[in-house]
Image (tube, rainbow, N blue to C red; front, side, top):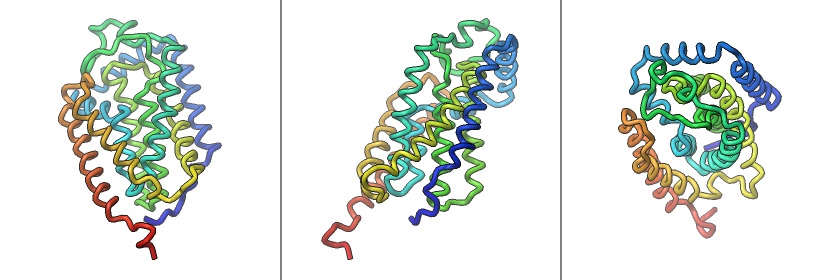
Length: 267
């Protein structure tokens, strides 16, 4: 497919928005009203069914993001950028969480006051929200792929809506504070931008340079979808659906891989 725009979004604007989200999260965390804000948003989310929030929050897991970005691209571009994002995001998340060591809502607020969906998450690894980071990173990569492949621009608005809903789901399920979600979202924007920028420095920019990479990523994603227990029983069918999407995509890729022209066949 012909690329039309391989440049990432404007760096100054992107990082300014990210900085505003991180600053807002920091201020909210320091506010005395943070617990009441958490309870208010958590209870408001009950207007939508638990199954909805379960499926949405599962979509922000690392293996789900690998699938959902990789399948957006016919070649290996989606796999390259999401692998880069997975590594960068993992380093940031697993460095900041133990360093900050902030308690989750369930450790501070009454368990009876919070509405939990799935298995309650109670530990000192609250900030930043890894799901929010992954969601906004995924949204950024989707935007870049939509522009690169000349997909309809209305998909950009849909991408942001999905990413924001995944981030908000962490409040709905009782796993994260609003501040965690804001900070994670800001970091996710930066990680997504960097992940898009980095693969174009790779030695080979041909979108079929690494045809085995999306097959590997989608195979791992499918394996995770069918074997991991994510503590969200209401989302089990959606989890399997994501795995099935990955399997369908990788089977298509394997078929296309064998039909790629060799150097001897190239005109």
